[in-house]
Image (tube, rainbow, N blue to C red; front, side):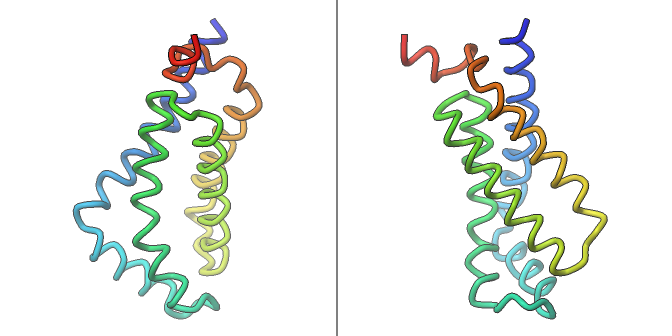
Length: 130
């Protein structure tokens, strides 16, 4: 049952990240404009915000797919945690306290996945290594 629980937790994280990226990719320029506008009065320079705003949806999309498939799972989980840390930092800088609990929940799910990575038996990783 642990393997199935791990699969479900991995799918929860994967679908969320995949969905975030999927809806943003078709409107990438608009998303970037929104994000750079949101951070315009923060201490982050626009030269950092702009590339991040274009990279974020692509990262969410790719990490989400990898998690859903269970492919390169350990690296995908670590990438997801790093992504959440970056998002949380930015959220704090613009004082968007309403978004922080959701990001912390995502991070917690990813940390649980990392903690119990040995239960990642229903995955492409396991299939490819057998």
